[in-house]
Image (tube, rainbow, N blue to C red; front, side):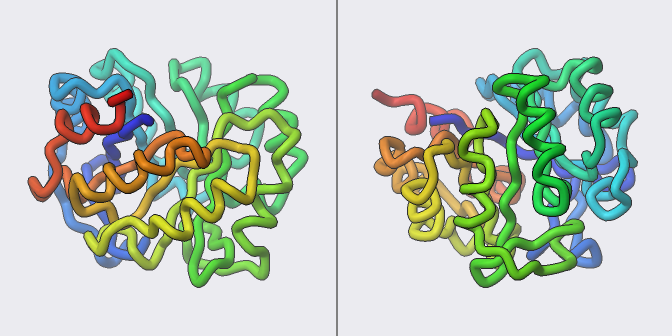
Length: 242
């Protein structure tokens, strides 16, 4: 199982939001590249980056910060936030991103995701963000009438690398990951699932690891790391244990 430390970008700064609310942002630093190096030094070969401004704008807003992260981090960088057309996808892969996360566009234009998954085998992740079990879009500001399981199943034969599932109601609140909903989704689709939202400590990592065989590929964690509640090296050790 993979542990993805997260760097969320807002105005070039490293932040964490509470429940996806841009007005409830906590700033953790003004040097994203330095933060990326710290995660690498802690032993992480993977990094999850979100352009929060881009998620709302529908296009890249923190490109310079992402470029700095890519230069500083020697491992695999997974990037999401406002990536909604082939030109954007092509541009990020050309820059050196390992995987691109598509959320809003996956709901509005499934064929776009399928085309990109075919063009970049193993490189496309579909973000399924939920409020009350329904898919949330546009930086989590809007809620659709599509269930998370139905959303995931749309892409089962498309060749996407993973489904990134976030319980928006828990994100950034340290309430603990929604293990039950995450595992239910993993069992409902053949696509590997990445857990996100609310991770508060090593117990979340242990519980998800138990369900690795159900299809849990990894877990994203942010605030717990920044607040010192989760030791990244210890989390990676649990996740990678046989």
